[in-house]
Image (tube, rainbow, N blue to C red; front, side):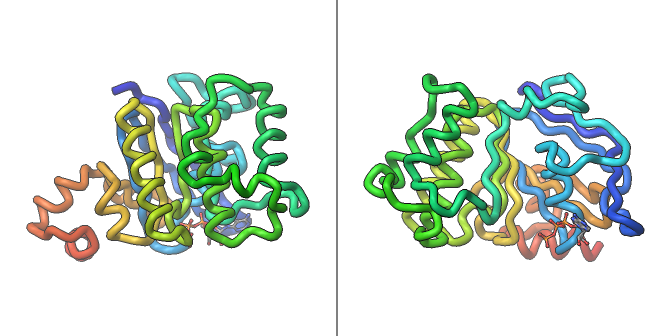
Length: 236
Ligand SMILES: Nc1ncnc2c1ncn2[C@@H]1O[C@H](COP(=O)(O)OP(=O)(O)OP(=O)(O)O)[C@@H](O)[C@H]1O
């Protein structure tokens, strides 16, 4: 499968705090990769660096082989679902979706399947500030997929979704993977990672501690459950 993202010796500090300390990794298409690590280990900082929302101090990020520094075009190929989506309060769902299409100048070749699956049409005239947390999450997920990106970055995607909606999103993730796309997920819910990830990248103190297929994590520890397997690996 094609290498979509490569990260080379990435460093980022906030003041005296060294968050990313020379991080190296690469991500191929057709995979669901879960980025795990303790609180404050740099997961969000890494994701935001890929998205161009955090500017690294040094190191390089390549998208499909080209360095992303000082470019923005590559971002059209990434769909991002933040943990907490922030939207203009008084904008209605329908207006928001239309505005995004106008900004992107893309009105065809859209993937509107999540809009339909989450039945968002029936809520198109609801203002964003009136939405429940879960509905807001559904809008974020629908937006992340709307422009058919090659890469999806999902931050705690199913937290806050009801079981049916969570199932719909998990099916969407599998469908996107089957199309050769890369899905990066951060989650602290081990059962969710266990269910949907192919590989785990574990960050510790600003570096990659390991990057392994889920199957190998389990076989090398003899544990069926990811949570237990991780505990064993980290203790060894
Ligand atoms: N803009 C910022 N200014 C200062 N410090 C920051 C900033 N962004 C992140 N940090 C710090 O960098 C460290 C890593 O944060 P980050 O959000 O990347 O961690 P994380 O692995 O995503 O954590 P969590 O699991 O809690 O979501 C934390 O100590 C955080 O306080």
